[in-house]
Image (cartoon, rainbow, N blue to C red; front, top):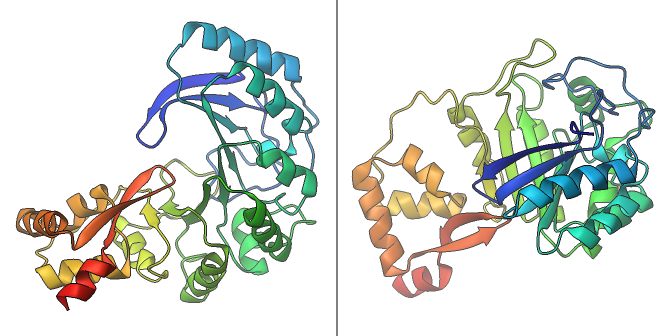
Length: 312
């Protein structure tokens, strides 16, 4: 039972997080992603090794007795947590003991077209779904999805779910060199995400040893990709590795134009701007030409359009 609960770890977004692994003994997943840090395994559409609700609750209760300052419970798995057959009932039980602690699930998004899965996910405070691909060929090549899964079902399910889910919905895209970083794939993802309008979009790349021979992108490549998405989408670059470029000198106009194209986080600014540019940015913030907007736990700096209209 001790393998079910892991952590706590400190998260900048969510505070002190405690993990709950619904497949603690082995990998059970309907994807076999090229970038996965777990050993390759045959894909499955259901769990054969199932921990009971009582086991999860007993383990969780023991840890919560010791850890009094947990901010969030993160539901995950060695595989796909929405394949756990008792997810909805488990969340009902968790709700009876968690008090004010928030809940988050990390899912690959593959089952979102299932009505029962949608109903279970509505019981979470935050839902984070992966969407690495927008085409069937990419889904089969990169995520190596179980044969019954289709990208059209995933897209349809996400749009359906978003209509009734009022809490933060975060989409995560993990880019792999030469597979889903092609312009055609990014353009398709952008069109769909504009329609979906999630709370936030996290983009990243491989940062742990992958199961298969694939290559990561650099931070600069991720940054360039981020500018290909519509400026209305809050894009967070999750990977900070392989940074080769020095911070640049931005004029006032360049800062405003950059933020107009894509909202930036504090991390982005520290990586992109040299000290002179940071000083200019802080002045624009004080003048009200730039303002902050929280999206799913991160503060983004965005253009204050009303202020800029007055000044133009």
